[in-house]
Structure formats: structure tokens, C-alpha cells
Image: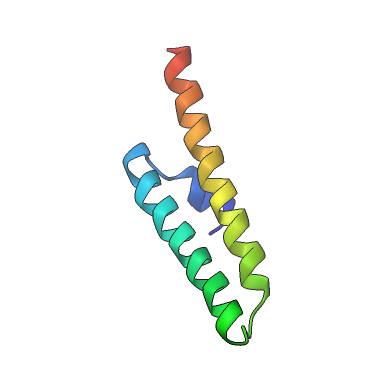
Amino acid sequence: MKGKEASKLRIDEIAPELTRLRKELYELRAKSVTEKVEDTTRFGHLKRDIARVLTRKRQIEMQATKK
């Protein structure tokens, strides 16, 4: 997910996307314990995507309080 994609998220899309990303990160961590993970850079990408979605959520919350 790029920053532009995250900035296009609406408030009703944030929770499912956040759930999906966290689940994917959990599954990747579980896989790393039981077997070898080929693409270890995926950990960092998922963490950054989660941070982008949380940042977008906070931006929406801040805009709502300003009005």
C-alpha cells in the first residue's frame, strides 16, 4: 500500500483494512516460527502499511474534532 492509497481510505474502510493487515502480519510471524519465510522484507512492509492506516485514521479523527 502506498501513501496515496492510504490517504484515499474512508472511515468505514479503515477497520477492515487494519484487521486484514494485522491478521496477515500474525500469520507471517506464525509461519516464521514453523518454517522458513522466503521474503523477510514483508514484515517491514506490513508494519509500515499498518502505520499508514493508523495515521489516516488519526487524520480523520482530527478533522472531525476541528469541525
